[in-house]
Length: 141
Image (cartoon, rainbow, N blue to C red):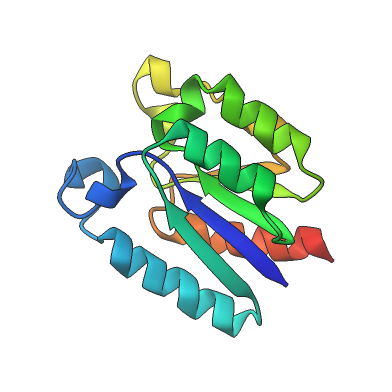
Protein backbone atom coordinates (compact mmCIF):
# COMPACT_ATOMS: atom_id res chain seq x y z
CA UNK A 1 0.00 0.00 0.00
CA UNK A 2 1.30 3.41 -1.00
CA UNK A 3 0.54 6.74 0.65
CA UNK A 4 1.28 10.16 -0.78
CA UNK A 5 2.26 12.65 1.94
CA UNK A 6 1.93 16.30 0.97
CA UNK A 7 3.43 19.12 3.02
CA UNK A 8 2.02 22.51 2.03
CA UNK A 9 3.41 26.04 2.12
CA UNK A 10 6.02 27.15 4.63
CA UNK A 11 6.48 23.67 6.08
CA UNK A 12 9.95 23.67 4.52
CA UNK A 13 10.76 26.26 7.21
CA UNK A 14 10.01 23.95 10.14
CA UNK A 15 12.61 23.99 12.88
CA UNK A 16 13.21 27.72 12.50
CA UNK A 17 9.68 29.05 11.88
CA UNK A 18 7.58 29.92 14.92
CA UNK A 19 9.11 27.17 17.06
CA UNK A 20 6.73 28.07 19.88
CA UNK A 21 3.86 26.89 17.63
CA UNK A 22 5.43 24.26 15.36
CA UNK A 23 8.32 22.92 17.44
CA UNK A 24 11.99 22.50 16.66
CA UNK A 25 11.87 19.47 14.37
CA UNK A 26 12.86 20.20 10.79
CA UNK A 27 10.90 18.93 7.81
CA UNK A 28 13.71 16.46 7.10
CA UNK A 29 13.41 15.09 10.64
CA UNK A 30 9.63 14.77 10.32
CA UNK A 31 10.04 13.04 6.95
CA UNK A 32 12.43 10.54 8.55
CA UNK A 33 9.81 9.81 11.23
CA UNK A 34 7.20 9.35 8.49
CA UNK A 35 9.49 6.96 6.61
CA UNK A 36 10.22 4.96 9.78
CA UNK A 37 6.53 4.73 10.63
CA UNK A 38 5.67 3.70 7.08
CA UNK A 39 8.27 0.94 7.18
CA UNK A 40 6.94 -0.32 10.52
CA UNK A 41 3.39 -0.29 9.10
CA UNK A 42 4.48 -2.06 5.86
CA UNK A 43 3.62 1.01 3.79
CA UNK A 44 5.39 2.80 0.99
CA UNK A 45 5.39 6.60 1.13
CA UNK A 46 6.00 9.28 -1.44
CA UNK A 47 6.67 12.62 0.26
CA UNK A 48 6.27 16.00 -1.43
CA UNK A 49 6.58 19.56 -0.13
CA UNK A 50 5.58 22.58 -2.14
CA UNK A 51 4.62 26.17 -1.53
CA UNK A 52 2.52 26.16 -4.72
CA UNK A 53 -1.22 25.62 -4.64
CA UNK A 54 -1.25 24.39 -8.24
CA UNK A 55 1.45 21.81 -7.53
CA UNK A 56 -0.61 20.47 -4.63
CA UNK A 57 -3.67 20.19 -6.88
CA UNK A 58 -1.60 18.41 -9.54
CA UNK A 59 -0.09 16.00 -7.00
CA UNK A 60 -3.52 15.05 -5.68
CA UNK A 61 -5.06 14.64 -9.14
CA UNK A 62 -2.14 12.62 -10.52
CA UNK A 63 -1.53 10.37 -7.56
CA UNK A 64 -1.26 6.64 -8.07
CA UNK A 65 -1.16 6.17 -4.29
CA UNK A 66 -3.82 4.27 -2.37
CA UNK A 67 -4.33 7.21 0.03
CA UNK A 68 -3.16 10.74 0.70
CA UNK A 69 -2.07 12.41 3.94
CA UNK A 70 -1.98 16.17 3.53
CA UNK A 71 -1.04 19.18 5.59
CA UNK A 72 -2.32 21.98 3.37
CA UNK A 73 -0.75 24.63 5.62
CA UNK A 74 -2.36 28.05 5.16
CA UNK A 75 -4.28 26.74 2.12
CA UNK A 76 -6.42 24.84 4.65
CA UNK A 77 -8.36 28.00 5.32
CA UNK A 78 -9.12 29.25 1.82
CA UNK A 79 -8.15 26.91 -1.04
CA UNK A 80 -11.28 25.77 -2.79
CA UNK A 81 -8.99 24.44 -5.54
CA UNK A 82 -7.30 21.99 -3.15
CA UNK A 83 -10.65 21.11 -1.59
CA UNK A 84 -12.06 20.30 -5.03
CA UNK A 85 -8.98 18.24 -5.95
CA UNK A 86 -9.40 16.19 -2.76
CA UNK A 87 -13.09 15.64 -3.56
CA UNK A 88 -12.23 14.57 -7.11
CA UNK A 89 -10.03 11.57 -6.30
CA UNK A 90 -11.30 8.09 -5.42
CA UNK A 91 -8.75 7.51 -2.65
CA UNK A 92 -9.10 8.41 1.04
CA UNK A 93 -7.48 11.67 2.10
CA UNK A 94 -6.54 12.47 5.70
CA UNK A 95 -5.82 16.09 6.68
CA UNK A 96 -3.17 16.67 9.34
CA UNK A 97 -1.86 19.69 11.22
CA UNK A 98 1.05 20.05 13.59
CA UNK A 99 -0.78 22.61 15.73
CA UNK A 100 -4.35 22.56 17.02
CA UNK A 101 -5.87 24.93 14.47
CA UNK A 102 -9.00 25.27 16.64
CA UNK A 103 -6.98 26.79 19.49
CA UNK A 104 -5.31 29.39 17.27
CA UNK A 105 -6.32 32.65 15.63
CA UNK A 106 -9.93 32.85 14.50
CA UNK A 107 -9.03 32.79 10.79
CA UNK A 108 -7.19 29.47 11.31
CA UNK A 109 -10.13 27.79 13.03
CA UNK A 110 -11.98 26.93 9.83
CA UNK A 111 -10.83 24.35 7.29
CA UNK A 112 -12.36 24.46 3.82
CA UNK A 113 -10.44 21.30 2.90
CA UNK A 114 -11.45 19.06 5.82
CA UNK A 115 -15.05 18.41 4.66
CA UNK A 116 -13.66 16.78 1.50
CA UNK A 117 -11.36 14.54 3.57
CA UNK A 118 -12.19 11.32 5.40
CA UNK A 119 -10.90 12.87 8.62
CA UNK A 120 -8.60 15.37 10.26
CA UNK A 121 -5.88 15.05 12.90
CA UNK A 122 -4.54 18.22 14.51
CA UNK A 123 -2.48 19.36 17.44
CA UNK A 124 -0.08 16.48 18.01
CA UNK A 125 3.03 17.95 16.41
CA UNK A 126 4.93 15.52 14.18
CA UNK A 127 2.83 12.71 15.67
CA UNK A 128 -0.12 14.09 13.65
CA UNK A 129 1.54 12.77 10.49
CA UNK A 130 2.13 9.33 12.01
CA UNK A 131 -1.45 9.15 13.22
CA UNK A 132 -2.50 10.24 9.73
CA UNK A 133 -0.54 7.37 8.17
CA UNK A 134 -2.21 4.88 10.51
CA UNK A 135 -5.64 6.34 9.78
CA UNK A 136 -5.02 6.21 6.03
CA UNK A 137 -3.86 2.60 6.30
CA UNK A 138 -7.05 1.72 8.16
CA UNK A 139 -9.16 3.45 5.51
CA UNK A 140 -7.46 1.46 2.73
CA UNK A 141 -8.50 -1.88 4.23
